[in-house]
Length: 245
Image (tube, rainbow, N blue to C red):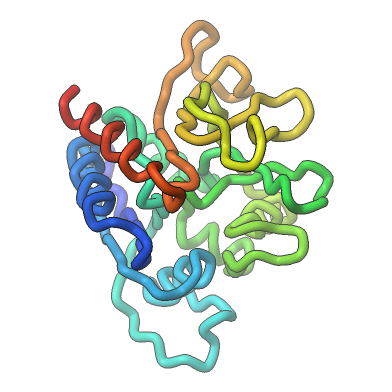
C-alpha cells in the first residue's frame, strides 16, 4: 500500500459568494475525496493571490507578501491543493490524481491563459485547481501568487517552475458549456483548444502525457465567472447532478 500523502485542499470564498455555493463545493469534494484529505473552507477578505500567499505562510513557507507580519503557523502539510469554490471534482480519480502528481515533484493544475496580458500566449497551471509540494514551492523560490505585469493569479508559479526545471503537468479542456461574458470563448496558445464557462478539464488525446490514446478522461469542472448573475444557480445544478450520480 502506498504511504499516505500529507496533503490538504484549500478553498477560499468571499462575501460575494452565496453560502449555498460553499456548501455544495464542500459536499462534492467530500463525495470524491476518497483519501480523506483535510478540506479547509476559508472565508477571506484578501484577494485570491494574497489568500494563497497567506495559506503558504500559515503552512510554514513564508511568502514575501507577509514578511514582517506575525503570521502563526496553523498547518504542516507536504502538499497544498488550492481548489476554487466554483470548481468541482468530477470523479474519485480527480483529487488523488492532482495530489499524487504533486507529491512526485510536479506543479499540477488545469491549463489556462491570461488573454488580457501580452505575454506571448503563455499558458500556466491555473489556481482554480492547482497542487504543489512544499519542497517544490521552496525550490522555485516561494513565489507570490499575486498578479504581475506578465502574470495573472498564480501564473508566476509556472514561470518559476519553468525557470527552475520543475515539470508542469497541465490538464486540458475537454469542452465547455457556455461562452464567457465578453467573448465567444477564451483561447489558449495557438493550436490548443478553447475554453469558457462550465469547462471540463482532464486527460485528452491532446495531452502529451496522457496515459492512453483512445478516450478522454474528465477530472474537474470549473464554472468560471460565478459571481455573474445566474451563474451560481448553474453551479448548484451541476453540483447537485454530481451528488445524485
